[in-house]
Length: 453
Image (cartoon, rainbow, N blue to C red; front, side):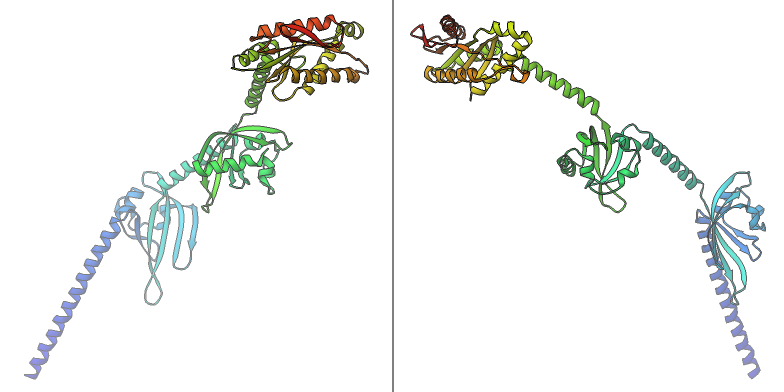
């Protein structure tokens, strides 16, 4: 009876042991199935190698990468899978190994592969095999090659561009510039652009221009065809159209980057055209010899004055005495110089809204708005005295003394239109000239009266 119990207990123990083994085997089976699902599901190639580096297990990823059938890889030595001369090591120690190499596919195609291997050891530390993962780098290499080509193309365009390209700090210090930028500013070597501080004073004709541009840029974030006057290395000005924007560097700090187009030739041409237009407008109203107003301006301006109600205008006709003698003695060129110097004397006397007109040859007209006869006579006497006291042509080493005669008429008592007023002043001048040199005649009550002779 006791023996029977012992046998029964032993059988029970064996059944329990077998049940545990089956459970463990089932767990191993499920784990292996999960492992197989994970390994086959990854896009990477998986290899299990024995201690001699022969392939013992693989996944679908390896088959897709290398184009082999499973039976063609199983048992194959790992060294036969790649060009050992193409190896580029990333990392290696006693447990892990990582390198890039060119693997050979069944069809003769080569593929750049990243290989990562880990060593398997038993409880005693002996090597039992290796687990390895293969990553196909073909697309990555193609992308890198495209990126390198794009960078080389950009660098080529950057260096050969005819426009100046640059990056700078907000303070104006140049961080990067292409050859065209350097040539625009007249520097032989790029290092000269980056050396030292004080970039704003170094490159800008007016430091306020940089401050204004930076302020506009902070507000608008980008500027197109913004005109700048810059300073070349030799100090000469250069005008540029700037197309710039705010950007950030690798550290996230704000910088300015943009393109400069040399606008100097166009700016010079525009300035010449503007000066030409200004000169044309000036000559349309002024006498080229004396700088005084011309007859066209006289008629237009006085007519406009006289159209105003209750306008009072005194008009003086002036003529140099015996000017022909000056020309006969000293020549026409010196005669023209005398006329210029007399015009300067006139401008030195007239004030406020009064102005002088070069009427014809040695004849002048003085227009005195809002001035009556008595004040106009004061102006005539001052001018008469200035002329008498001036030694003309002294800069030419000569001493020419002259005098002038004057005729005065005033609106509205003597005439109410420009032609009538000029005619009355001219009649007074004619009477003054008839009385001798250095004379003044005034129209009073419709007749001329000699004020001084």
